[in-house]
Image 1 (cartoon, rainbow, N blue to C red):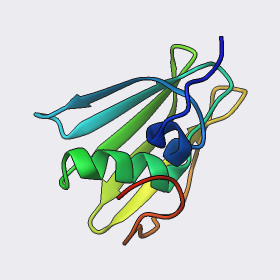
Image 2: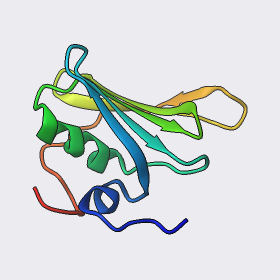
Image 3: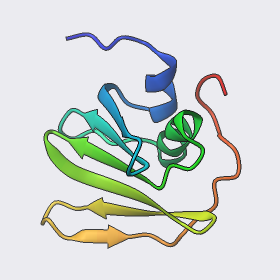
Amino acid sequence: MSARRSVINEELVCTARQLIYDVEEQRGFIYVAAGFCTDMSGAIWLFKRVDPHVREVIVVAGGEVDTIYTKLGQKWRAAFRIHDGSWIVGEPASFDRPRGGGAR
């Protein structure tokens, strides 16, 4: 299967299979193939353009939750599932503006 080039895929630095946004929960979902991941700032800014008040972005890789980006005040924190099934939680970081990728 060949990946279709798109602004979304360039921002995410991977090929997204499906995007879903839950308006009530202010939560975005990005579905990618097993073994793939997304660029954190690309994933956040993709959904910030859908809803500036997005609170969480969840990446599902191969049918399993792989990464969760959560807004904490003005910063975002990433939690990553590693091979043994445990999670690594990063320090909160600011994303004041998008970087790289496609149109803003």
